[in-house]
Length: 242
Ligand code: G3P
Ligand code: MG
Image (cartoon, rainbow, N blue to C red; front, side, top):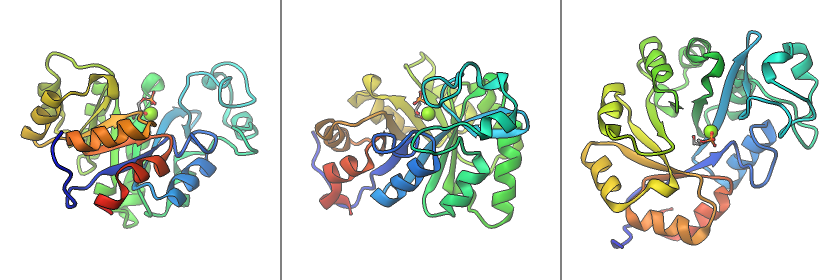
């Protein structure tokens, strides 16, 4: 492992807020991530019935007291659901109003309904109100959706999100003009890190909750991590980079 240098940033991204401490993708979870010192928060967004909902799954069952597909319910019914600890399912605007530019926001497009248009419209409003475009990072596993988003709001940085390593991962990232490569931990190795850096891409790794692994990734040269426990990531590298 290379020597740890004090000057290199290590971006701690709270995964679905801070889902190790609070119900995922809720305002409480986001607030907890910020309180614990995360630099960014990652949230999953879906478009349905005129709203952008913070929700990871297609269905409501795992994370709320509702049942079935999110898209089977009108907005009014979704608003009444409990997403854990008495928290509702927030909208993207509600999340951004809570965050108030205190941390960067990685909006992950969950694209089974197509949400590029609605997310672009929402972020455009916040940018017009003074939110720096570079404090957003929009990502998706659905790269054509990401491409569509880029045409709508090119000033917002993109993260090419992979759960594996496609043969032409670098070509796809370059075509998108992505600034970050967001990749599952199991696919990270020294060659990929070096290759990404040589191409000017920051490498963000999900989802990393083990302190030893967090420290190892930092020492390997990874630029940031998605973690359910922002406190652990900070503890793993804290004194050297903060
Ligand atoms: O964006 C990183 C990570 O959240 C991607 O996977 O399934 O947790 O949304 P998932
Ligand atoms: Mg996600």
